[in-house]
Image (cartoon, rainbow, N blue to C red):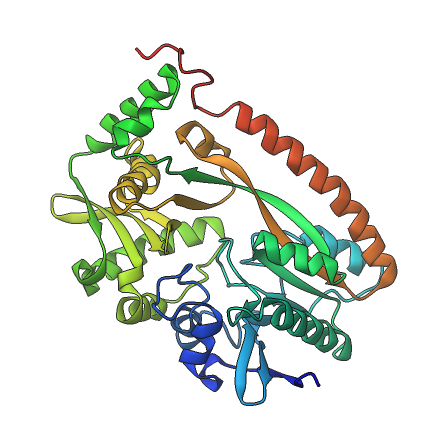
Length: 391
């Protein structure tokens, strides 16, 4: 006789045992596979007011129990807009509302403001099929019972995308640029893989950036101090105001990161005359460095590329990390060794007619994404043959 699985909907991470949640996120050591679905990261978003009332991200987390044991969970939110997701469905919302429908609220299984691929349907090891099925069925039933337009699972893994597709969800693909560490011992070894022209361009960029009149520092763990977060908050506000109109994250979020996540952080800080002038915030996973935010109070040529990309490569090589994910969009990353990769999301739409239209769109979009990745990869900076000019 199969064990009955009960689905609970939680209005806060405070309603669940952190160790039980992290066991499903496979993050008992706090470092695997990434910090973003850990209880402490998601709680920092909630406790800082970055999500919750007034933000358009209302926690509705899913928890699947077999008896008293948590076997699966998912970070889920009721959304009243489509901001901070990076899998854009604004056109879907406009089309549905022009036809007389109500697109919001919708349900979103995601890490807010974080376009990073990783597990979204979190399960205890060995219970992937049972746990993922329970979470998907529970989320769809919750959406249907509450009359919401749709359910979205964004930046899930490829295996989750396939499992969701088999359960009847619609599969969407996207594109990002990631850097792969091909066993490099030094940055110079990475450069040796590039064409001569690209290699020279990167060397020139690094010389230009490092001549900004100050020094670049890599800070992690206990090297991070409260004043560093004061400086980065200024940078983040400037970037947020220009990109989104207002920052998604609150100042308190960064204080909570300092308290509970600083071992998972790399902050690249550019200082001139003893004052911070720019910075790039990264999070450190088990084998991947995740570039998240950049900002500055002074403009210096190429400093953005140095702080965000080349310093990240230096760190990844030194730590033996296998990959860098540098966030959403940005074909300018291609020339700097970041190659296009496919990302995945899953979608359920309540209205049958609208669902058919969305599926037709996704079929064409998947084909276009696949073709685009192939073309961009061919235009990458890496040498096509070992005999290419090494000058």
